[in-house]
Image 1 (spheres, one colour):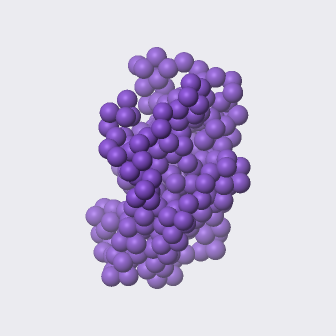
Image 2: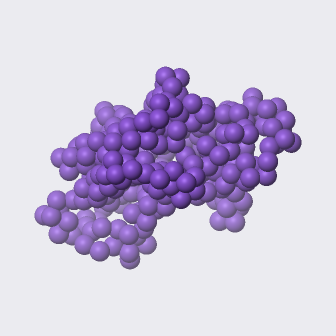
Length: 316
């Protein structure tokens, strides 16, 4: 199916899936700030994961997806606890201490960690273009974060929490990658989300109490986080990740801080300054650099794998 949408060896569907993921994850930083005024970090994570799990389970029933094979459960469980569970609680807590731009900056050291872990544990290649794109995008993310943190609103606790979230995110991605070779993107996302929901059940009492008093807008933000940045965006992420390396997919998310700036501008009325816009431009430009193949490789025909041979490394 993917080949029908390919041009010169560059598949369209994985790129579109990655784009959807990046846009929705950027919107999550703004929605978390909004909902965080009414919900505690653990309650918000549980409500988000519960909403996402409902949407994903319904989709699995419609598509008649069964249980993942046993060989995929290790990766699903690890990514579920670390990425769906711990990451979301830590990020929610961190965003109560720092602004959305700073949180996006700190969390986006994750792609660097993904690249290092992917090279070490998964044998991912580290081509020069990817390294160059990561360097440029990290510089852009730093520029965005510094420009938005100029008001002195950052706290040491908030930065540490966002760093912990980044570590959990990177470990979750690397654990998820092998599972995607054995199960579908929808299966990996659905059961990872269910594992994360179970891990956050200790916050159920807080969620019940806070739902009763929270304004409708905050609850709708929580549901939005579950259905779109979680159910939809994590599925499109898994679809794209199954068709490229963890390092290359991680580099794609360096566009998130730039989009957070734009969304904060539109939704919260925070007008970015010239330095912020320059950093955002670097973030976006670097994604194109990191995801571009050398001219000679682009012109080469796409190899057809032998029976049973994995296809994940043919697409970038």
